Image (cartoon, rainbow, N blue to C red; front, side, top):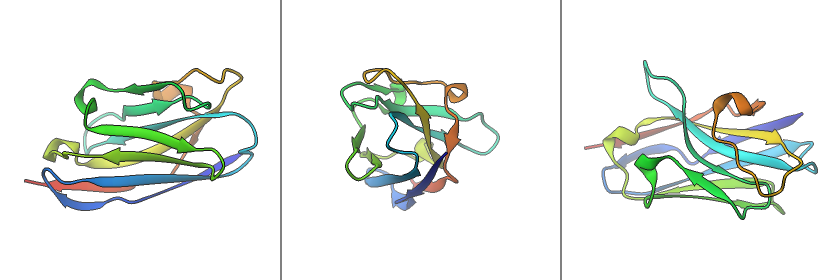
Length: 127
């Protein structure tokens, strides 16, 4: 079992920045690939970024490339999402997700590939 808690969401003006954190607890001694997803009202949950257990490989959805950065600190069992140049269309509930993996350099970009999810944190970008 892995328990995930997100933090760092809030209200920000367009062009501003936020840093989300996801603290993992439980069986985190096992290799876990991580991802950030978001879901706006009336829309499906979509991947934002993903990172391999090693941290060496990352994935970004096209709409956030060059603006968002995913990173992790395995010593702290924490994954981060630095979000810069935020836009109103980034407004969503952001979720952290985790899954065990035996491949240190693989990321996972589909919602169905993750077993563990956090409760979500609201990000609102005003225009």
